[in-house]
Each structure stands twice: as C-alpha cells, then as structure tokens.
Length: 77
Image (cartoon, rainbow, N blue to C red):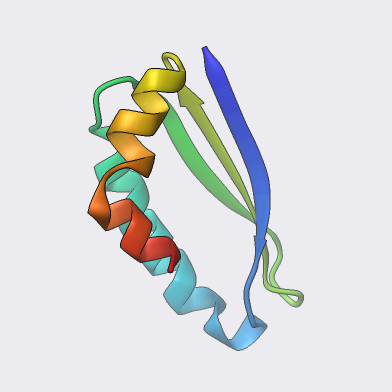
C-alpha cells in the first residue's frame, strides 16, 4: 500500500469553491482502480489550509489511475 499525504494552501476567500472542486475530484478518484481512499479536511479555514490523504494499492495504481489521467493533471494546473 502507498500512502500520500500533504497540505494545500489556497487564498481563504477561495476556500469554499476549492473544497467543492476537490470533493468532485475525490469522487472520481475514489472510483479509480487501485484507490483505497481519498480524503480531505480543512485544517485552518482562516488560513485556507487543507490536508489531503490518499491510499493506493501500489505505486503503479497511483501513477496510472491518477497522475497520468488528464483530468487530474488539469485540476492541479
């Protein structure tokens, strides 16, 4: 199993829109082969800081099911 965690910072004013967009991404990601979980949590709304935690079956599943897909790449650009 591969676990990916990190934080994301966005301008606090953009937080509600960003959370909605990341939830849409999470819904799609959870359906991908090899994804075991994909969760986000707002750590500090005033600072616009979120925690992201993903679990994948293995590195290949992460790469081929998430990173290599255009939808994910476009989301992060």
